[in-house]
Length: 117
Image 1 (tube, rainbow, N blue to C red):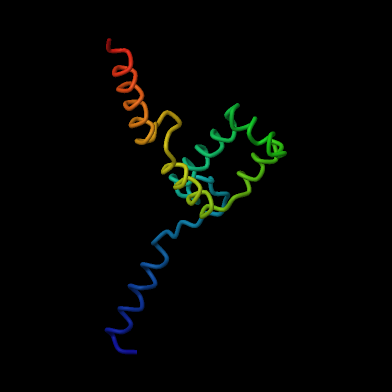
Image 2: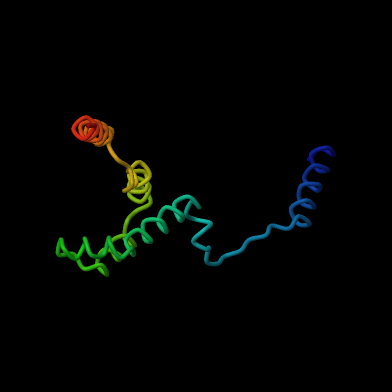
């Protein structure tokens, strides 16, 4: 071997021997494997299923709330994100449609005209 090649081999062997290679084996926490937004979405859907009005509606459809919770737990990350996206776009229950406002204003105007004597 040439002196340069011999020197490089010795340097590489020294580096490999002295450089620690940390290797660990163990269980990973769920949060490190699943994206944090998925965990939040899953919790939001589970809290939605736990609501009393939702459980009553599920029972009226013939679905046991415990089965619904088990189904939510069994959903994949993709399904959780899809459902959470739908929940985010649903209107809140207190919203009144524009035509209802128009109808209410029309009724008020009609009552004013009728009783304005």
